[in-house]
Each structure stands twice: as structure tokens, then as C-alpha cells.
Amino acid sequence: MSDNHADLIVLGAGPGGYACAFRAADLGRKTVMVDPRATLGGVCLNVGCIPSKTLLHAAEVIREARHINDWGISTGKVSVDLDKLRAKKDGIVGQLTTGLTGLAKRRKVQTIRGTAQFTGTGSLDIDGESWTFDQAVIAVGSAPLRLPGWPEDDRIWDSSDALELRDIPKRLAIVGGGIIGLEMATIYAALGSNVTVIEFMDQVAPGADAEAVAVLHAALEAEGVTIHTGTKVSQVKATKTALTLTCEGGFEGSIKADAAIQAVGRRSNGSLVAPEAAGVEIDDRGIIHVDASCRTNVETIFAIGDVTGNPMLAHRATHQGHIAAEVASGHAAALDTDLIPSVAYTNPELAWAGLTEAQAKDQGIAHKTASFPWAASGRNLASGGGDGLTKLVYCPNTHRLLGASIVGRNAGELLAECVLAMEMGGRLEDIALTVHAHPTLSETIGFSAERALGTLTDL
Ligand code: FAD
Ligand code: NAD
Image 1: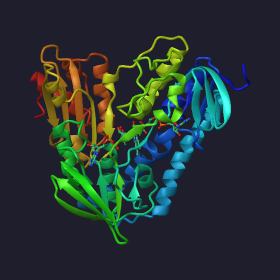
Image 2 (image 1 turned 180 degrees about the vertical axis):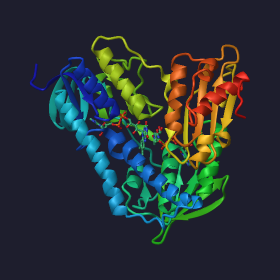
Image 3 (image 1 turned 180 degrees about the horizontal axis):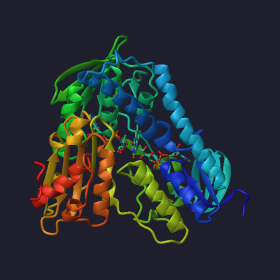
């Protein structure tokens, strides 16, 4: 056996990879983790979840400062020091990635900076060095999709460019109204850009509940964001003074912009590790398919996170990471993929889990819905909240909760109660009879269940 031998090697140090490596180390495995990035944490910590949520917090404070004028509190004109904001964001990212390095050291996980590629079923190359391994976990994540036919121009950004905060473009076009597009619209609109979102489908956040999305759509428009749905960009021209996007469909015409963000989804990085050399099957979208235990078609090789396809979310990657480590170490574990919550950290937040009403209908699943409008929530009004909605999808026979969609302040935090209820097979009665503190936004969940049961007195 060569010196370069790993008991368990993890390719990629994102939320999937580091969670897997740390769990495996905790289970007594001698673990190696390899990633070409200078810092641990993958997309999520370096150029994804954390920097975007930092800027979304700044956006929220800017908006609150403006709105509080209506309450008789004057903050004066809000000004943004872009260098200071960028430094704050980078500082928070640095704090977390440095923390991870410490956690890896304490667990004696060997970290290698390099790019790994398989050379056989039990061997790989890391920047020219040969390694052998007993078991491997592929956790190499994903990268932004690029639209074909666009010119090369540094005013055309992907999400990482947008999070660099190079400047605040006067006119910003965002192509793609998914989670990234909507979060970027929220950030840049608050910073002062004139934002236009161009979405191909008939609604933004296409997978989410239409009623909940309508609330977010209206709120974004009220903040000055222009949204064109059912629209595709057919041509992009770059001149010295502007980018011109020609649109077809719902909106016919051209949009002039000083910068444009492409936010049209992400592609798995699976092909970057030469999986075929190890006999690992990969599809033509670069996705490595796994079973509920995160096993690939090769017994000793696992895959987790974005490389395994949708939903491409950090918490899914982390849970898969734990499962792969446990299964690789001889424990039984599996992931229920139906219950991965989604949250857009927009203003207001949009959060959902389980079945939406449309999905229940499409799949022919017996269902009913019950909702509570936040206009009737004392806590929402008392904290200056705007429009919001809590909506439950449930089985009319068993009263089991099948899905939940929430739009409003802190929707992402509130959703956890619904996810737990679904995880535990909870029924409307369980939710309605749970005493929710007053006045809280969580009451809207209890009220929705009471409404379904006919016991609500708050509407
Ligand atoms: P990644 O985080 O992509 O990490 C993969 C790592 O593998 C990278 O560090 C890469 O350098 C490394 N790698 C690549 N090739 C190789 C190789 N050949 N050898 C070794 N290493 C390699 N998700 C959420 O749940 N919540 C959010 O709020 C959220 N916000 C986001 C905001 C943005 C702007 C973006 C872009 C994404 C966001 N996501 C969010 C998605 C989330 O970042 C991903 O789902 C998550 O990072 C996936 O984790 P992963 O471990 O699979 O891969
Ligand atoms: P997405 O798939 O969520 O959204 C892409 C959007 O672009 C879709 O609505 C799609 O219809 C639209 N689109 C595709 N081609 C288009 C075209 N040519 N013209 C106009 N619109 C077009 O992808 P994303 O927003 O890029 O995000 C990528 C991944 O990152 C997702 O899996 C997402 O879940 C994850 N992410 C999660 C969070 C979060 O959890 N808060 C935040 C950011 C990103």
C-alpha cells in the first residue's frame, strides 16, 4: 500500500463534504478531504448561502430604516459604504471558513488543497500525486449554468460575481426568477439598483405555491422591481454604454442594463472527477445518481450534495454527508428526500416543504388546504410586517399534514414546525392543540390548522 492511502477520502469540502468527513472522523475513520479552494466550506460558505444572507440582512436593515419613517422615527437618508459592507461580508465568511479549518484539525481530518480525479475503482490523482483509497465520497458540488450566445463582457455576472459587490449598477437585469434571481433582486433593489427580473416560466419561483408566490411577487414590485414572467431573452448586445437584452413572450421589447446576472440554475460538477475511470455512472447532465444511502453503482464509492442533482440545497448536502459517512462505516442510514425544506430569503421570505396544492392535484393525491392571512396576525401588524400567508395542505381523511407554504417575515424559521409535524406524521389536531405563544407569527400555523378543523376564533 502506498503512503498516499486513505481509509475514506472525501472529494470536495462544501457542506456535504465537510459534514461527511467530520462525521466519519467522529465514527473513528481515518479521513482525508480534498478541495482546490483556498478555504473550506465550498460554494455555500464562500460564494453562496453565507455571503448572500449577509447582504440580505443589510438589505433588510436598509428597507426597515426607510419604512420606520412612517412610524415617526427618522433615520435620515440611508447611505451605503460598499467597501465596508463588502469587508463585513468577507469577514463573516472568513470567520466561518477559519472555524471549519479548526474543526477539521481537532478531528484529525487531513485536508489537502488540490483537484481530485479518479484513475481506477480504488485510486485517484490529486494534482499529479497518486492516491489509493478503501472508500470515497464524491461531494464536488455544482457550478452556475451559462446561457449560450451571450457576449463575453464583465458586466455579465453569475451569482459569485454578484456577491462580490463590485458596484451598484443603476439598471440591473436578472435573467432567471428562481431563488438566486429573487434573492439578488432583493439585495440590489435595496442597495438602489433599478432591477428587472426576466423569468421563462409563468411565475417566479416556479416550484413554489402560486398563492404564496403572488404575495412575494407583489412585494417585490412594491419595492420597485419589474418582473416579466413567461419571457425569454432572445438576444444580448453589449455596447460601451449598456447591455441590451431583447425579450420575447410575456414581455416583447428590449431592456437596457448596466449589468446583468444570469441565474438560470446550476450544473452538477460530476464530470470533473472522471467518474468513468472508477466505473461510476454519470448522466448527460453530470448528475451522479445515488440510492437513499447515498451509494453510487460502485459499492465503495458514495456521492452527496449538488453532484447528485436537485434539490441543490446545503441542508440536503449535509444530511446526505452524515448518511454516507454512517453507511460507509457500517451503520444503517437513509434520507427521506420528500421532506427537504426550501427557503427563499427574500423580503418577504418564501418557504415551503412537502406537497404544494398544485403538486397534490397533479399527483392525484386526496387533499384539502387551509390558510391564514397575515393581515389578521397581531404580531405581523405590530412588527410592521407586510402581506403574508400561511397555507397548509392536508389529507381530508387522516388530517395528516402533507405540505406547507409560508410567505412573510421569518417564514424560513416558521417552516421548521411544519417540517417536524410532517416528519412525525403529525395531524391537524396535533398542530391546533399545540399552544402557540401570543403574539407570535407561529400562531398563523396553529390558526390554519384550527381553521381547517372549524375551531378558529381569530378570523
Ligand atoms: P459545494 O458547496 O458546491 O462544494 C463542492 C466543493 O467541491 C467545492 O468547494 C469545490 O471547490 C470542490 N471541488 C470541485 N471539483 C473538485 C475536485 N475535482 N476535487 C476536489 N474537490 C472539488 N443552499 C441553501 O440550502 N440555502 C441557501 O441559503 C443557499 N444560498 C445559496 C446562494 C447562492 C448564491 C448559491 C450559488 C447557492 C446557494 N445555496 C443555498 C446552494 C448551496 O450553496 C449548495 O446546495 C451547497 O453548497 C451544495 O453543497 P455541496 O457540498 O454539494 O457542494
Ligand atoms: P433555479 O433552478 O432555482 O431557478 C432558475 C430559474 O431560471 C427558473 O425559474 C427557470 O425557469 C429560469 N430560467 C431558466 N432558463 C431561463 C431563461 N433562458 N430565461 C429566463 N429564465 C430562465 O436556479 P437558481 O436560482 O440559479 O439557483 C440554483 C440552485 O441554487 C438552486 O438549486 C437553488 O435551490 C440553490 N439556491 C438555494 C438558495 C436558498 O436555499 N435560499 C439560494 C440560492 C440558490
